[in-house]
Amino acid sequence: MSGSTAVPPPRLLSLDAYRGAVMILLACNGFGLAAFVKDSGSPSLTWLEFHTSHPQWMSQFYLFGLSLWDMIQPAFMFIVGVAVPYSFAKRRSFGDSRSKILKHALWRCLLLILLGVFLQSTRAEETNWIFTNVLCQIGLGYGLLIAMAGRTYRSQIIVGGVILALSWLAFALYPAAPSEEGAAEKVGQLTGFFGHWSMHGNLAADFDHWFLNLSPRSEPFTTNPGGYTTLNFIPASVTMLLGLMCGQLLRDERYAPAEKLRRLLIGGAVCLGLGVLLGGTVCPIVKRLWTPSWALFSGAYAIWLLALFYWVIDLRGWRRWAFPCVVAGMNSLALFVMGSTLRGWTVGQLHIHLPAVLFTRPRGVVVETTLAGLLFWLVCYWMYRQKIFIRL
Image 1 (spheres, helix red, strand yellow):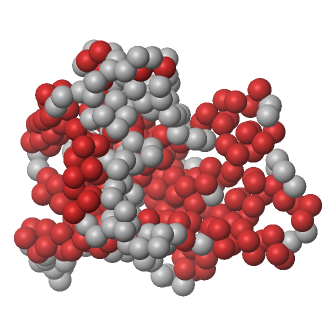
Image 2 (cartoon, one colour):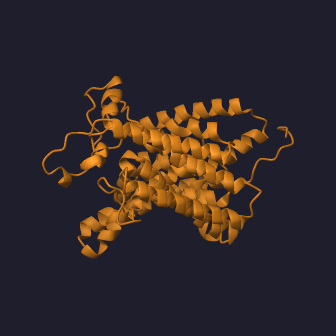
Image 3 (cartoon, rainbow, N blue to C red):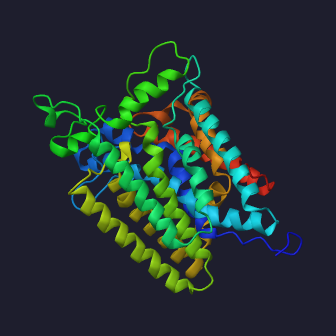
């Protein structure tokens, strides 16, 4: 269809709500619940602290269990993939060629990476050339999404499988760090074959020790305190690729809505089964390294969350409750930047202008993070009313 007669695809409200729910949790810093539980010292609330903070290394608990907070970044990256078929179709409806769309995508990759570096440098004394920020990770993998947009599901599955297999093979063949006495008791130190994925003693960590020191630094880079690495973007691109396939499914007019929902549920079950199988045999489930098993394990929950939002909002038509999420989801980049740069200043202003009794510990941390998040949301609401939407 020509650009003058084609109609851009309609927005998927459930996708906006899904994105907004993730961004609200992120902008509000989990509503300060982890700090609240820690300050209160209540043993009965330890489960709440667990689900609002990152586990120290291993990301799988029991057979299917994981931390809710560990799902924030996978869900964010998955949603980027879901949105690509819609933005791709919109640009095609305007007459853009694939090569033009790819050029725009590469420019967007660069901007996302630079914005991620900027956000990580806001509290530093120099430019902090680190690429573990979620925006950097999306930017590094976004080109693959555009290259695979509109391809067959078979091609996408093959490409995703090859990426995961090569990622696993690279770690498995790279010499593991020597085991130390009592290594199993140390945070992030794995034993046996899984030792290839130990914290700070793996291929990706050694790569960063070389790569990140190529940039100008006042002090040499040694290790990331949390064990996150630049090369996470390679298997993480499969998380976005899963989103791309789900987005194509939701736009596929060959299937009825109920059938789309069924396929989402089955797809999530397949990913979960494969993730658990790999996690128990050849590759530990570690979010901080984005191991292949984690990409599938977390991808299952990301798919099921999309299925839930799709069923509630688009199939059942229960939409009013989702309005706050939709507002946040349609300006997710603005909300993310505000949460990353203005939270500290905003909390300081709240302490200045509101009664001190509101911020009495332990509940005070919940009050201050929630109020800060509410103020950020109100800015997004004003932008929504003015039809101002910030995108790259």
